[in-house]
Image 1: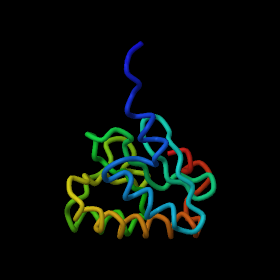
Image 2 (image 1 turned 90 degrees about the vertical axis):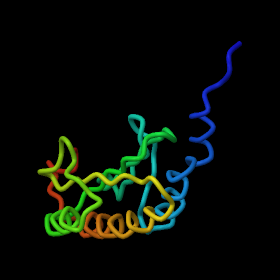
Image 3 (image 1 turned 45 degrees about the horizontal axis):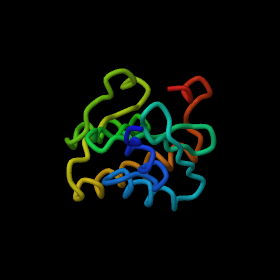
Image 4 (image 1 turned 180 degrees about the horizontal axis):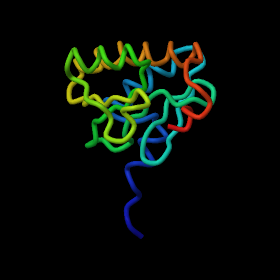
Length: 128
């Protein structure tokens, strides 16, 4: 019998590396539900997805959904780029390569969480 996949153990532990640190931080926030989906950790408030991060250790692209003003600001400040498919819906991508970048990511995640909690997204936008 072959070896089991390491990914399953990482799921049971709540992730590894930057994913584990993000999951610990976001898991403590009001109303946040974290679930694996399509090879990524999905961060939800209710049924609305506001961010996701890869399950695999080598992938480091954090996707965050921001309000239009916050998206423009994130792109202006640097370090973020428009999401390749969903930029028009407020999504940006940030690469998390070092522990120092988690703090910057958490700042944008707080804004995304606040916007989602306020319910600024329309029903048809929730599927993005």
